[in-house]
Image (tube, rainbow, N blue to C red; front, side):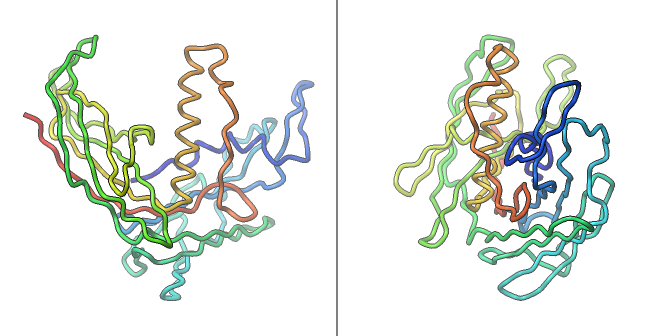
Length: 284
């Protein structure tokens, strides 16, 4: 799972500013902190990171990735360290977990050195364990008012938070579906489910939504997120909702102020961790 890398940079162009840039008589702010880094840790995927330079509106340079950065990650539990390799232009770095393993309940420190730039630092702790979907039910098909049929679905699981680590959850899904026009079976793109579809009662959590009836099989992924990643993803979903409203309303983009969240010292972005469990559902 590659959670939201890069597209949130625009939100940081207008925050924490003390300088300005003028474009055709219009004054735009320029942030004092000019770098952002996005890095997510999970045992189920390679380590990936992106480091970008935050551009002013007047900067028309399309290439704003930092290619010569040194990105290191240290496991504070084992004192092991890995330096990420440069993968491609755009400021993309990464490494496999062949020799450096991301482990549950371990704390990691991210350090980013870049020539002529201030050093970025952050830390996060991988969740102690991943929650598992215990019950999954679905209802009878119903018309969606267009050309498809849908089913109501509900999933539940137990909170695995501890006294020292409060955890949160997110669900994504993917699978195969039959195209209504061509009749061909194709792969569905994984879709992220919003936090508003998840409710909690005591230590039990519930996910309620609906899905198209022509999807088979359906793969549900339950992501257990540590605090930093949860706050960042929550901000991203609020931004997405406002963006969608703006397409149908003149004032859609002005629905309120979204609190900025970053856990990067001397910069912007996110260094977070998550665990994933999965469930395959075949609806006949």
